[in-house]
Length: 118
Image 1 (tube, one colour):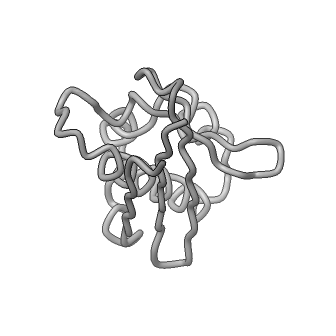
Image 2 (cartoon, rainbow, N blue to C red; image 1 turned 90 degrees about the vertical axis):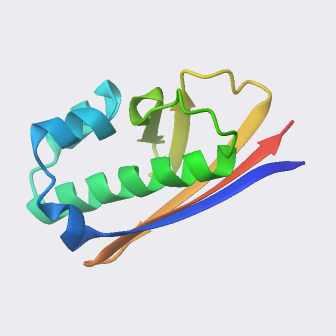
């Protein structure tokens, strides 16, 4: 059964000036930061940040529990060996399946999340 759906769209130009350590430390988990540090192309870094930001905003919308204790670092958006994104959470999600898709263009990053109870 579907528990929640979330979507978010980020204008990359808007966050391009936010690529400072303070913003990155707030948005990216340690695991995501390690991936980010391996990216050498500046536009790819921007789409990575935009995609993670949009994904986490979409996650918050999908959970829509009103729980204000959750923050960006509670979730890691990683990629499997085929490049498909998946969510790692410090919250109890063992009875849930989180489906996530991230896409981007030169100007925007978008993420879509569906949370399904098992």
